[in-house]
Length: 157
Image 1 (spheres, rainbow, N blue to C red):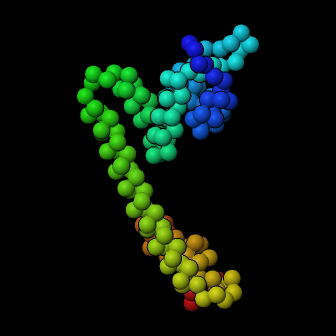
Image 2: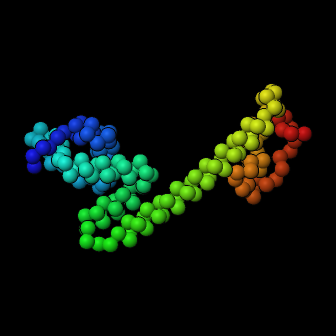
Image 3: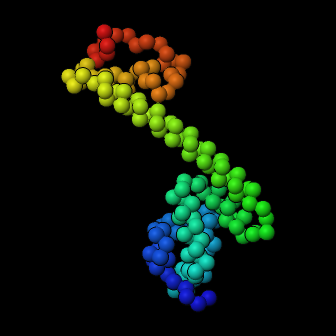
């Protein structure tokens, strides 16, 4: 294979760290490359293209198993792309759920910060909310957390 490059050059060319390239090899995302007599890895253009694909998929948040499935399907171009479409749709639904959860977290943090009276730590509403999950509006409290805490230092009276 002509145009083979070292792992360091492959890392530079693709923006994937050396340790990550080794990891991708270990989990089967990237085939183990041929080695020189001195045991140095050698990568060709197909390897670099695959690394770029993996990096982009990871940047979009795809899990390793989904990337493996897409790469396996990519190797069989005659197949319909319905399975890849399903993987992307499932991932989009997961991303949408995470965004919704993050929006809720943001609102709760804003509520906690806005309730702060800027007084003493003993009277801090942020600490109080973090100590007593039932005061948090973002998550549904667990059955144990639904009981109101006894009033004491640092809690609303």
